[in-house]
View 1 (cartoon, rainbow, N blue to C red):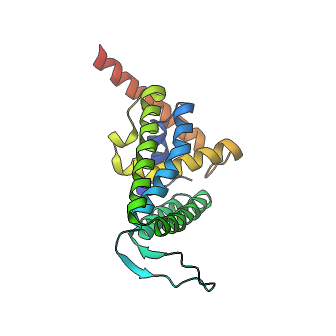
View 2: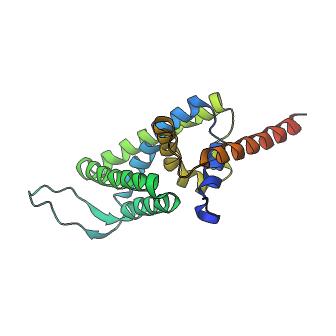
View 3: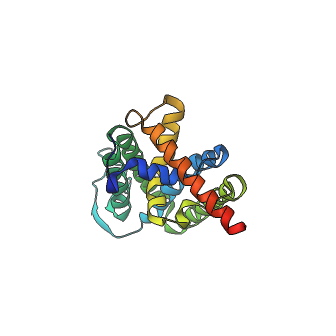
Length: 199
């Protein structure tokens, strides 16, 4: 059964899905959304730390610290679990692994090289997504209309897309049917509005 308000997964998924209906654009997002998240965490590694985790017993220093990067990953992961316990738990695990991996990379690379890697990756990934929208979707990205929701939902959206495509997963029975109807209604409203502007 669906939830309401902030944890209404159908509403969130339908909003994001209305901007991502073209298969090529969806594939581009599947490839590049999580790298954007990962490299953002690399940069967040250099925010003030709340607590430094002890070194590994083997003597290997991972450089893991509880900072804004950890908080950022934790908030994303917790929100996804609240949206859907099963897929959300997988997404939360991915957020945790991204934080660990990003922290290790940033620690090993150092600030100057990390900044360059992050800048190059972000520019490449964002450019690819804008091309996906402009060339294939022919609609502006969701972040134009709702910046917070687009950034927050993007990683979970692409994960759900993959789970649905590979395993026909849905959070509860009838979820995809309901979401598809909402997406079609929203896209029809957008097309009608676009037609009125052009006439």
